[in-house]
Length: 197
Image 1 (cartoon, one colour):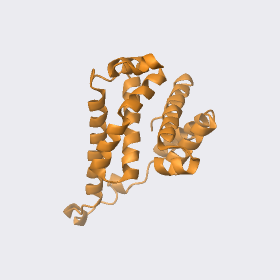
Image 2 (spheres, helix red, strand yellow):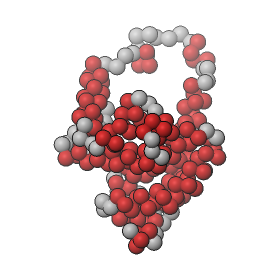
Image 3 (cartoon, helix red, strand yellow):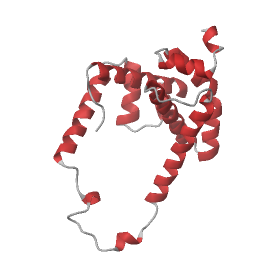
Image 4 (cartoon, helix red, strand yellow):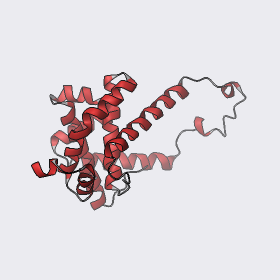
């Protein structure tokens, strides 16, 4: 373990990409304070900062595991850029939700407007199948990981709330979610289940 702590970010990314989850733990511990501080300074809301922090590292995990990480030697800058983009997306969504457009007062074709249509039967069936598959995969997770997934995705709790409810630190809750996602992805690949709708 001491040897792994002295490795460069690039070495750790390569190690993690090849299946060593401990390497990502070292990366997370090495950079979590600076990344979280950056997010907190921008959004000025601790719960929101924790959610963006978690989502940033989840995106990093997925990108590395898919072999798409290319910022050699610049892991901190890369993960901070992911966080920055998530913050921008959040502000865009908020701005769009709070904007009233002149188009809303124009004549509306109620029969040909996709925004006003319900999902078609096929979309509903696919979505239900994905949710069913995710629930099945959840049952194979260790209890602590299952609990975090349930609270986060089915009860829409923040990681602060999850930490409080489960009596663990936020970092532990984040770690459990990360391992749950990795485990479910592995199980889905083994069982050839698509988790996309």
